Length: 400
View 1 (cartoon, rainbow, N blue to C red):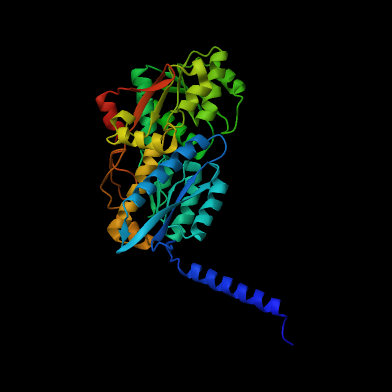
View 2 (cartoon, rainbow, N blue to C red; view 1 turned 90 degrees about the horizontal axis):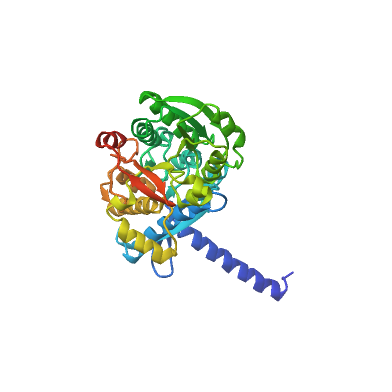
């Protein structure tokens, strides 16, 4: 018996839809490239950051750097192997959480992205990097400072920023040598970033002739530090160092002053933000922190980039937008040299990078670390971070 006429029509529509879906799927290759109606090939670049939660201000900043780089590349009408391409940024929220980051990484692999810029935090980037390595997808980080990131033996991981060993050494030498701090207390948040940084700082303090008199621990979601600060107060430290992010550092320095602890307060790049100044208020004045890169005023392309960024996003740069912008441009330049967005073809070109970016000269060593990484020191004055001039010998040591 023949089906009713309406059923025939519906069957025909479904068949056409299935055919259309099959054609759409078949137009994508292994690099995540797909043809558009305009005749361009879409190249997917993944951007992984915490876009919600206490670190969202960092994540949105980093994500915007990727988007700006992709938009400018699209304006250049780039061709790969003679074919017009369009770069599409695929952004995901990893919540700065290792488990979520691996789920995000698998979604990127399934989406056949051509490359990944991120993740923002070391704790998220390190577990995710294994998934990208297994899939052969290049990963360039603009903010990951844990040495472990490039010590795993993967050939697909690169960073365009100095690491925590360099930051720890620079901060410790400044604390002991310039601030004359001999008795130093340390708190960290037990994350890959915070604990690793605190460990490196502690080693460097002892090497510089200082003494770590107390180590305490918290979490990256805590808000009450009175108990651990009380235990530290009795040790009469000259300086308190925090390995962690601004969301905890701001309340911590407030509670520190409330308890009458007069020690200098110091953190690293996780503390060097306007958010820390806002959260810490008057108690944050005089704090010290580092960045795993050059001072903004010393970056060769920062002024022009800052103007473009403000115009495009109507926002101030938080920290890592210049680095994720450069990371994206480095990836695209490698594709151009290879004439392809296929990861297997352009990955070898990333290691050959010799690029003049917003943040400075970018080239990689055989592990994927940036060559001649720079560490800069800052002090908070009147609510603004001002660069601190380092002794020449110390600056040279930090850059090695």
